[in-house]
Length: 400
View 1 (spheres, helix red, strand yellow):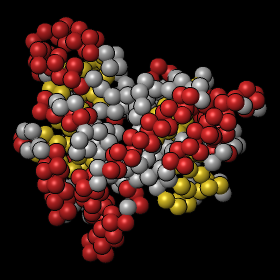
View 2 (cartoon, one colour; view 1 turned 180 degrees about the vertical axis):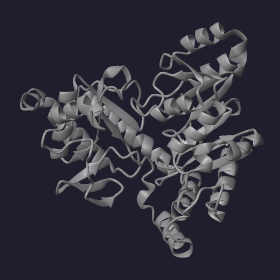
View 3 (spheres, one colour; view 1 turned 60 degrees about the horizontal axis):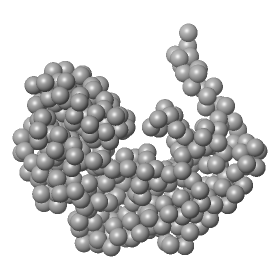
View 4 (cartoon, one colour; view 1 turned 90 degrees about the horizontal axis):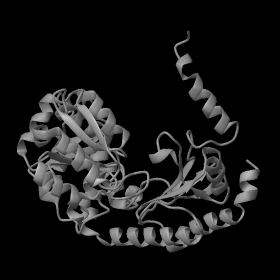
């Protein structure tokens, strides 16, 4: 048996979907023109699948800060935070996030994925029980497995199901870890945090919220869903990433308890991973300042999101449950999804195709992510592309 023979079924499925045409799992953007436009296969397209929520990837101040850091500090740290990889910028960013989030302790990590592995995988050891929303991100599942915790899933956004499962735990519920997300990355819906907090108050437990897709997007100051709903003091640990609203790469964890700092000495993903490049940290610090100083970015983002959601709904598409910077179009099959995805690129719009088992309920999704940098005209062009495809859906699908 060959080393990769175990992936035979996967290879066959990929071949049946992708063939020799452009395929969605190895898409290459050949040129970037702006936060919202690029070139794919020689065609200029609107980028509506990048998670670039505030459009800060081309922010002149962030680029200038990164360039200055490159010139002064080089291309990388070549070491972990524990060894030689903590530069002044890493510590400064942590202090700025402490101030921005109003928390006692913040740790910066190399990616949002590593942040989840480091924090959850270390806290949720073999003696702990974790209650996690069934639709949580793969990094959260991987983190729970890494720590060896007992995992109990509750139905997506079903607070009654969470409560039932906690009641069954009895006294163990008081030390359980509850894991949810601010905005879920597939359907764009929000966690019912107020109701979850009420369960936590009565039954105990520690609440961890991954604000990857809600940081910079929700809240009066852009801190996320916990701020939006006024329950920040009840959330024990906030987790997040720099690769969405902040337009770079990296991740963080924030806690009201200063003892979280002990994770620097206990977490293997923190100890043994190279730290973020100084240039990335410099751009993140500048982007964080933009979140604080330019609330109009959030306002524009939500205006664009509502405009796109309404336009797609009026075109007859089945969408996720609420308007959000993540807008999921639900389709009947993987083949239909692939056909629609390719047809949209032909019409000058790039979105994400997401197939089972990565999707909730085994549905096929064409997933849009909206940016504050999208112009109203670009949003209208995205709607027009979907609408024209809806009118020709039968012919397009038949030609697959």
